[in-house]
Length: 446
Image (cartoon, rainbow, N blue to C red):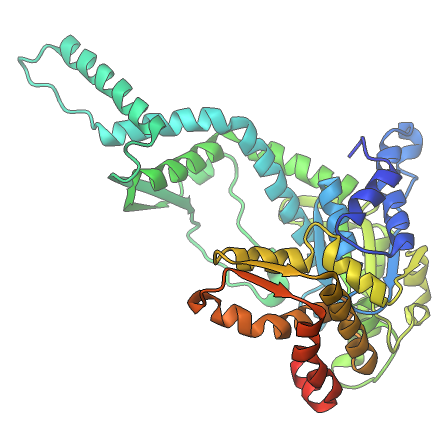
């Protein structure tokens, strides 16, 4: 991340997202500012707050994808949440603080994976030793046995077994292993929806006195390797250190993407499910402003978490949000509707382009497929026309168009002897023209 300039961040986003240059520039600057803040003098560092971003534009134009790719670039804890699933305090449902708790869980898993990588070699050695002991159980020596000879023979056999294990010669052999579950308390707590974070934490040393559920299983050596390695990794990793780093990681680099924020904008009806929409905004406000959230791992400060909000804003407008919440999203980015040319580029240019995906799926059956330039233009034109005539669902329309176009091919391919398929403009028109013309039929199919 330290090596990426805003220009390079935009170039990376260009590999997956077509257009929306203004949005890419804004998020690239926001990401680079996090790196800049870490290099600022400590006396001023805490005063530099992130510039939260609100994205508005039609569905299917890349709002979520921009945020998701940004988090992958930054290798930062990232969570996408829908504003509509939260309720005002006092109503049944999830409270807004749970988004921070969920982000902490993600960060802890990320930190654990990093630590597991560091101890992997040591864990493999320890797991191999345990596996050898299972395959070669120690036999009690008799009164006339020469202990030295027995140990020497056992040592030589162990070395041979280790070699075979490393080469995978024993992978299909069965072995019985005993796994331990976590320590269980004597009292169980059945929590309500709002108490999903409630848990039991044992004082140091006490958890060893609690009963652990042991379970014996017969598994292949290959499976046993993985299970024993995981157990050894958990023993070698210092969880207190992991939690400490994870919380700091969230506070310094966490990203929360709040989707569908337009659905809680405006006062709307004062009856039924809409009654708490402004209440949810008021509950989100302190988290975005910066507050301390209690989690089962400790207190997390949200002052420097980057918040990115997004919504289609078909009915409401960003200005319909409560003024205090608007003020906490100083950067506003408008996503433009996709043009016919954009659809063509989406089909061809991104690394995960739809045509590349379908080509790979069809090649898995031993058949090749080629889309002519005219076919690509025709598919883009059809997608644009259907979006104009019906609901504009952006790039998602390409999924429906391609599924309809290739339906017969994908169904018949396993039984067909064809090993080469060419899709040209005429094929696309023949398959889709009548459907697009018939609005009633298009409504159900496209």
